[in-house]
Image (cartoon, rainbow, N blue to C red):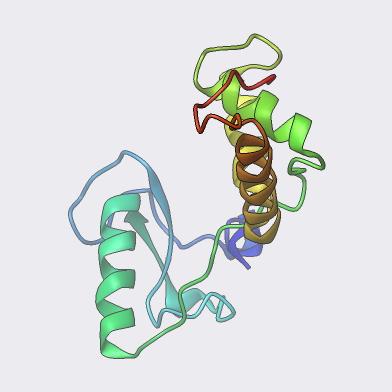
Length: 141
């Protein structure tokens, strides 16, 4: 829905200026009724990211609208633990395997269930490296 609302034919009329605070930075399409499915011109206006987020939180607390998660169908998340670790290390500046923006995109595109699976696998490997003495040994990755 988010991408359809940003299509040229679904943009609100007028210049890209926040209807709530007048900002011209980080301005995006805002759905007045809080439902991204409703792309009727009278339901769309411009809002800066801050105002759009604040209004979304207020609407959620009031039981209005429907908050959505951002989704980029073109982005591809990590498919393996190795890809995940490379992305995290690159994002932290500890690897030059990929650019920071590419690493952030991969991390964001990785579904939560895969992130949880990777975390479980990392902790399983860490536990395997605890020595018989109860002292922690070096992790091989």
